[in-house]
Length: 89
Image 1: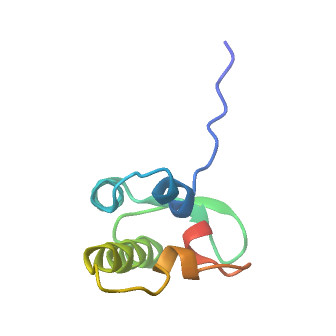
Image 2 (image 1 turned 90 degrees about the vertical axis):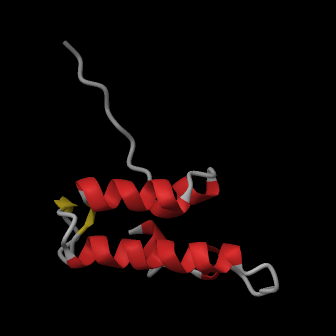
């Protein structure tokens, strides 16, 4: 039986595909998050991990930006570019 390979989707790509910040936050709070640790290993992080809390903080910043209709600055997602983009980790 062949196992299907699941492609990793980072927070940024999920947000660009219009997956809501609330849906993502609930999933992280209930199940944790996957990503790369400081040794560049792909691992599962528990919901109470610092990595999960960072992801939740990123989602909260994005949600706050989207609620502020007078804010004409780039969103946190749009402003996060380059190799240290936290939405891609």
